[in-house]
Length: 279
Ligand code: SAM
Image (cartoon, rainbow, N blue to C red; front, side, top):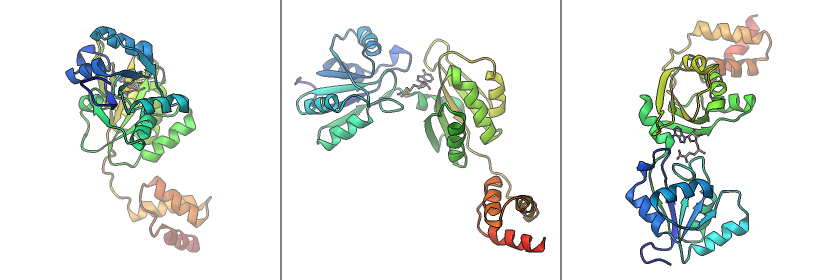
């Protein structure tokens, strides 16, 4: 046990590119911790070298064996353990969640030394509404799962945020444009690094821009909330229901039209029945 930090788990954010972003508190915690638990010891060693800290690093990710996790939790009664990930805030698309749960369940001190997080930094750069936002992490790699995930959050009245990598950017932007239409969006890349850039445009514009030119580096995609669309008129609803009834029974036709016109299905089934009887 050391004299300066109480025993417990210290969640320490680290820079997302620019090493000058280490705060005094982060540096002091890393210096004073008894143990540093890190996602990748080679990456964390570079940061510790930069700070002139020599300390043993213990590997931690959420898939370590129960024994490794339990050993760390047992140590928390006597030692200050600093948890870091490769970059940014631990637990945010990074390991740590299970360790925090276990440490809390065992009654240990759990505290955070906050700092850089690519999602928050990107949100400040995009020029899109910040009052409500939804962080969706990485989109799935497979096309169907990716489309399903986007459809699931399409109606949220919030700015949407995704982590991404250069090679996958074009596919993700295309899928987002297909599912969400021409919403305003931004691609924030290499934040705090030498080649930081934020490119804004509609989703189709961004999808086209990056279609054949995968950029290098780390990326956050930010998508503005859905605009206020005018409510569908009764004539539009009837036309959509008639078309759907050509191939579907009334219940399914009503559900499909509710989805297509992005409206409540209340009363649509009754209207579909009435139109079917008229036909
Ligand atoms: N825990 C980290 C945080 O707090 O941001 C995120 C870790 S996640 C495994 C890595 C992803 O974060 C990258 O693929 C990228 O989407 C995003 N990211 C990290 N650093 C970034 C940077 N400097 N610029 C843009 N995006 C970044």
